Length: 395
Image 1 (tube, rainbow, N blue to C red):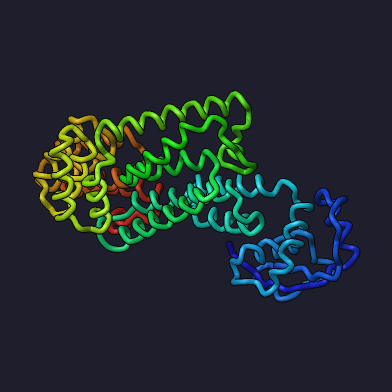
Image 2 (image 1 turned 90 degrees about the vertical axis):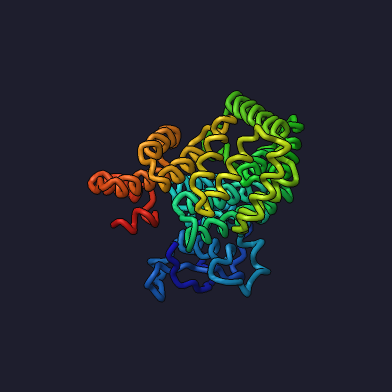
């Protein structure tokens, strides 16, 4: 968000009438002796009585509280500022939460996070804000991973994003809603930290009355009807039980599996392969184990061995877009273009908006000398993610 200059003024008495028109200020006690911050429009350095508005003052207060322009020297005024904003804009929590979630859904994660920073200043340690902020950071990390490459800035950005998301989840779990426990459990499951996922999902299914605060993800998305909430909670309980069953049946909370995942995140493929082989000796039908082994081999350019592992993962039930995409990469590198195309088409059918899959179809078309088709795939990838490195390199 573009910021203008912030100055501090004593509000003219005539402006208090405007404050009262904006919200429920009857029970709020205005204190004219406390200067208020004013956010001037970008490029402007001053204002007149005619141009001064309530919105300029509210914007200044929100910037002050959020700390987005650096620490404030006037923190002793913060309680007054918060009370003023809440009186003038009583629905601001849900209003700004809705705006942030819409931004995140449209892929503008940075703006969504700025909005949640503003809300955090206004409602410190609010559990719903902490939940939604963690969800946005997780979505940003996933977007970075989907558009990144195995080397260079793509991987660095994705790994940094995962670390930021994990810190946000642990912060949110300090005083969680029940939804926070569920979504944090999903996050750790996706990261391969299955012991932590099992701990959280077990805690989640033990809750009978899930708390829900104003501005939480369910409320701002419009799911406020009691029956709808009960149905959503029932689906989440079912999902949590399914994931717990998968963890326990496949031994995914095994120490060797956890160490292998951690080693892969550190780009130590050789040690990760040794650990995951140790795990697979005890759990030969664990599809995720075969996937990790195939991933390590693929990153070492052992294409045929990697392909065999991904095929084994599919055979063991891990038949999804990620596995098919990884298998296709290996087949492509061995020269099996027909097999790679078949796998990528299956993967795209499962996940039609996956930029990595679309870019890989473009790369395959290039290898086959089908440049017009490659251009169409890369153009489609850039429409979904203008920063996709593979598609940008072609352009």
